[in-house]
Image 1 (cartoon, one colour):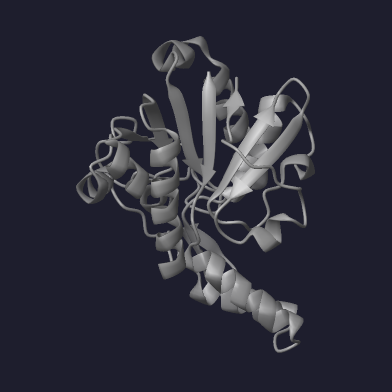
Image 2: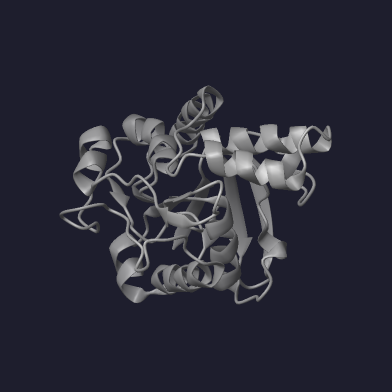
Length: 256
């Protein structure tokens, strides 16, 4: 089964993080002030920036050409930035995109009090909101209430995220999914940290550093579970990616 992994385009939170990092490097903010600014200004479910929307359009143009004539099955995280990243490609290729409740970013949808640093559930759309906005398949989401919840209504822990990644890795290797996809291409649209944990789970390594994507929007990943090697291609922020991995050109696919 062939899988194309796509990390979302630039989000408002990515842009905020970049700006805070610049202020810290310029010694205009110390670490405490930087964290307070992050908690005060971040969105619990960030939209794409203008640049991010341009990246999503470029992705749609690029892969609609590369995948012309391909039969595709597409799954996306329910977060706004991933739903918007795949939208131009879905429109160009007339894809029936399915929203998977387990593909969201580490931490989930949360907000944080900048003074107390206490986390709580953020502003979450309903499955019907997603369907109304994007006309995506929401059959895997709850039929009522918010599409995302956390058992303690707080920030998802790193260990919880890693367990979720292992669950998705098992799903990707499962016979029912292979029977469903067959010879078609499977597209997974997700997030930096979650994909890092997922790649590690897929190839059975315990460290995430081998597959660290870095803060690169609209990144595409190819990994080889047999040799435990990976290569990446991207549209946005390639200067960040080169700190971690040397890129290669070509269609970025994994065969599971």
